[in-house]
Image (tube, rainbow, N blue to C red; front, top):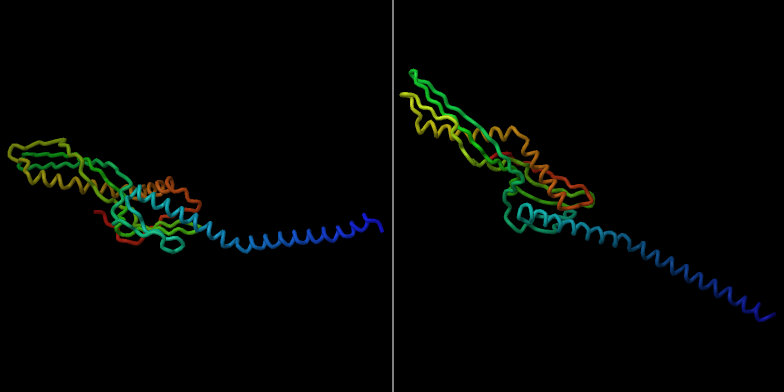
Length: 227
C-alpha cells in the first residue's frame, strides 16, 4: 500500500468528523437562537411600547401641560404628576344680535345690540385622563369634548332710540346685555364644535406621536354640561 493511499484513508474520517462537528455547532447555535427568540422579541416589543409611552407623555405635556397616567399592557408605566385641568383645543368666534322694540301710548323705544364672543371647546381633564398602550392599539380615555367657556369680547350698540315719554331704562340695557351670552351659547350648541375638537386633538396627537398601531380616543361616560 502506498503512502498516498494510506493518508487518503486517514483524511476522510477526519474530514467527516470535522463536518459533523460543524453541523452540530450550527444546530446548537440555531437552537439557542430559536429558544431565546421569544424573550428577545418580547424585550424589543416592550422597549418599543415604552418609547411610545414617552412620546405620548411629551405630546400631552406640550398640548395640556400635564403628564397623564400611562399604562403598558395594563401595567402602570407613568403616573400623573400634575393636577388635571381643562384642555381647550379650539377657539371660535361667534357673533349675535338682539333687538328690543317697545311702544307705549304711541311712544316707541328701540335698542339693538351686537355681541362678539369667543367660544373655547375642548376637554375637561379633571374628569379623568388615562392612556393604555397595547401591541395592537393605543387607547386614550378622556371625557367627551364640550364647550368649555363663552367669553364676551365686544358689544356694539347698533340702535339706541328713546321715545318721547317711553324712555330706555337701565333695566332694559341690563336685560339686553344678559340675553347676548344666552344667544351665543345657543348658537354654539347648534354647531359641530365638539366634533371638531375631537378631530383637532386626534390630529395633534398623530402629528406628535408616530405610532405604528392605531390610536383611538375613547370617551368616558360623564354628564355633559356646558359651563
